Every structure is written in structure tokens, then in C-alpha cells.
Amino acid sequence: MKKLCIACVVTLFTVFSAPSQARDLPDFTELVETQGAAVVNISTTQVIKQHPLMQQMPFDEDDPAQEFFRRFFPGQIPGMPPGYPGRQREYKSQSLGSGFIISADGYILTNAHVVDNADEVTVKLTDKREFKAKVLGADKRTDVALIKIEAANLPVVKLGDPNKLKVGEWVVAIGSPFGFENTVTQGIVSAKGRSLAQENFVPFIQTDVPINPGNSGGPLFNLNGEVVGINSQIYSRSGGYMGLSFAIPIDVALDVQKQLKLKGKVSRGRMGVVIQEVNKELAESFGLSKAQGALVASVEKGSPADKAGMEAGDVILKFDGQPVTESSDLPRRVGATKPGSKVLVQVWRKGATRDLTVTVGEMPDDEAPIRQRGGKSEEPAKANRLGLVLATPTAEQRRAIGLQYGLIVEDVVNAGTRTDLRPGDIILSFIHKGKQVDVKSVAQFNELLSGLDKSATITLLVRRGDMQTFVTIKGVTDK
Image 1 (cartoon, one colour):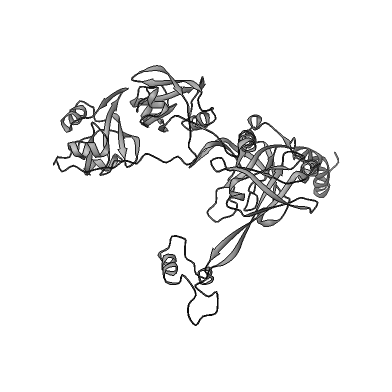
Image 2 (tube, one colour):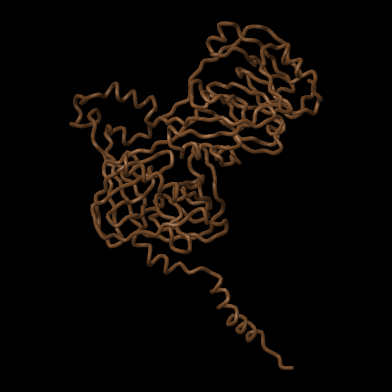
């Protein structure tokens, strides 16, 4: 038997394994060569009027010092050179972003925040040509903007289907991070359908593609060279890339751009409800077999949902025939519904399903929550077994807060620290094993508590400030 030296073995291993490894790794060169020319660099300029002295001082816009200088240096100061420090000057603030061409005649998609408040938008192509762009419309809720340059025969990206994306699939981003034009980065799809705070209308694609400031508005490609998303946000504590990037699915962006192109704004449906996620404890309280749907915490008076007979405590299971698995599913589906449409909504109420017909309304451009005042009762009461000091509101207080019933939480003591309730909360309903009871007196509430086992789980419908929410309490142990 012949023996091979270690060096020979290593050489043979390298020779035979290298082609296999090369075949396993993706090659992005063709994708970049064919699609890179349709990716553009976007620079914006915003004119800001400011006192020269203020430019040197680190004051926020709402800092009291700003008001001081506005009041005491409104004009020219005697003895000082003209324009310093009282007279305002104009300064130009510049920022960079990315975008991509979707039609040969110059329509370009980017992020709304890239062109927000811009006085001038410049688009630079890979062949170094530059064009002034017009912002046709921007939708802040989805962070999508449509801009237009006057040009013809431009290179155009291919558009793909983000619904076919699989977690773990390779994806590529092209953009201008920190101003470095047409930079290519790669990674994989980390998750799909992500919901982010204050972003209810976008089921984000999460990736680990390195995305940094300047990448915003650039395309996310699959390995077929098709755009599947618009890079929009990063999760960062430092301002730079930390392995969590989020892209707007291209189908969502295209729906938005159609409306922006047609009328410069986006119309969305609304029902007029405040919802929250259904967790395991809430599902148990409402008698659901599993945690699903969107729990209605409150219904706006006179809203489409109110007119359809929807109530606080309903769990929305289906909207227009589509299941509502997570609460985040609902805003997207309602928002995508044409205002004026009649939609069948299936809800879970008091242990059974019920169908409601809702005529979907239109969401205002700047929808604000309903403002209501609160009060505090002076009726003394002792802490109950939850450690809550409760009181019934006076007639005047009920008128002030617009409620016919409910109990005010005046104090939280002892075991009450477990409940996530706080002074000023108003308890409206008591829910246990699918049965919901409106709370109208302290005696009634304590009687409901007295019949429960120490390990029982209950849910309370609570008014807190401007909002209503459901609070679950696990274990009703004595003080």
C-alpha cells in the first residue's frame, strides 16, 4: 500500500473540494451587470432659514433657548456686522439616498423619507448623467415615494413576486451607503411579514443584508435578478448596520405607486377600531381554542365598525373571507380595501362566531386618536384581593369621560403590583372563561372576584388615557 505525504493529501483535498464549494456559493456578477444600471443615486437639498448664531449651538427646535433667541434677537443687533446674529440666513441641508427605475420614461421608486421636505431632488445615473426630479407623491405610512425625471430609453429593473420568497434565500441590495454609489451587498431573507412599531401597513421583509444610511430607497433583488423589495429601515443602536434590515415588499410599493401616479396620494380603508394582539391568556379568557385574531379594545363612536354593531371585546377572526391570524394582519387588509366597499367581518363574541357587514370608510391623511378627559373619584374604598383600590365615578365624572359605567383605579397596593394596572385607569369590563360583564359598582366587581379560584386567570377591559386595552391577570391570589 502506497503512502501519501500530508502535503499531497491537502493538495488533493483542495483540488477536489474547490469546485464543489464554488458550485454551492451564489454568483451575483450577472445580476449586477444586468440590473445595476437601473439603480440610481438620489441627492436632496433642503433650504433652512436659521440665525447664524443658532447654527453653532446644539439646540433642538423645541428647546426653550430657541424661543429666547427668536424673541430677543428678531432683527439686526446695534454694533454688530450686518446679518449677525439677529438676521436669518438661508442654509442648505443635503442628504443622500437610492432609488430604481421602473419605466423607461423616467419613473423612479424610492423611500418617502429620502425626499421628505426636499426643495430640490437630483438623480444621478450610473453613466454619470444627472437629472432634476419631480416628486409626484410620497406616502409616509408605507415610506414609498414616486419621482420622475425627464428622460427616455432608460434601463429598467425586473420586478418579482415577494410572496415567493423563502426564509433563508439569498438576496442582494444595490445602493449608495454613505454616498458610495452602486455598492453591492448580499445576505439572506431572515424573516417575512415582520410588523414594526408604528408601521401597521407593511409586512416587512427582514434580511441580514448590510444596509446603511444612503441605501434607503434602493432595491432588494432575488437571485433571478428581480426586485422583491425596497430597502427602508435598519435596526441600529449606533446608526450603522447591526444585522437587521427591513425592506418593503415590492407588491405593496407598486400598489402605492399606482395611486401616487394617478392622484398624488393614497386612499386607505378604515373601520374605526383600536385593536391588540390576542395572547394565550386572552384567548383563554375569551373562550377561544387558540390565540388568534385581533381583539377589539375600543370602537370609535359613529365609525363604520360602530354602525356595523362591532363591540369592544369582539375578536376579529376573518376580514373579507381572509383569516386574521395576527392582529397585524387586520390594518393591512382594511387599509388595502377600497373606501365604500361592503365587507363581511367574522367576530368571536361571548363564546360564538358572528358575521357583521361593515361599509369601510376612508382614512384621513392625518388620523388622530379621539381625545377624552379623565377624572378621579373621591369615594373612599378598600383594596380588594387584587390589591386595587377602586371607586365608582360621580355623575359629573361620568359625563366628563363619556362613560355610563366603569370603576376608577385610585391606588394599587400589595399584590396589585402584579396586575399592570395603575392609578387613573378605568376598568370597564370583567372577562372570565369567555363571559364578559360590564362593571358598574365596586361591590359587583368584588363579588365577581370572590367566586374565583386563586389560580384563575381573568381579563379586564381598561380605559387608559385616550385608549382602551385588555389587561390579563394570572392568578387571583389573596393579599
